[in-house]
Length: 277
Image (tube, rainbow, N blue to C red):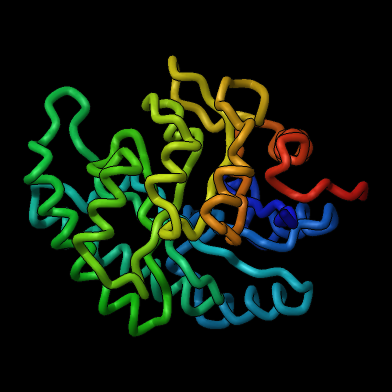
């Protein structure tokens, strides 16, 4: 198995660095693939056409590329029981899709709504909301040439790999819809990541890696939690996965934690060994 290079999700930089500054810090360490996180002041919908073109030109000139963009779900909810909130969220996702198309990101990571942790919306109802909202986004995304990568998130309406797989099978539109599999999110909700990979199979287009325990949901440097990374490389190989492996590390020492996590994942055979700077 040829190990893929490690890609970087830029979540750890959303408050400290504009996206271009983040890329300028990481590129000298050999990183070439990035998942940009949409969060002002890091990356904003308000970026002008000139700014979007300049970012794309910079990346082209440096040999960098976006695997995807990621719109955090703190301010959006595709599964809200409020129609107004769902309409607002659709508009936000449409803006994110346009931004992705403009700066050359082929996928938008999509959290399939949020549910109340104290008294969740009935599963059938929340699933219907997600089917309606994502169904409305599909033709818009297809027209722009950007896919929607549905992510497994603990508080979402589709938290488990089996939920996402059945949703994707029911929705069809495989040219637009796929899965983003987050191994820390899976582990936190007591799903074995290897089993989740088997369930989603060939529908996975992105993999997020970080560490967590099952007591507190985290995206820590690899080694600080107890995610079972052993065997994940073999599980992905069994599914003929050839997509990006993205480090989604959230830590005060963003760069140091990324480099440490890269080395740890390389030890597990998931990514190529990091070359010294």
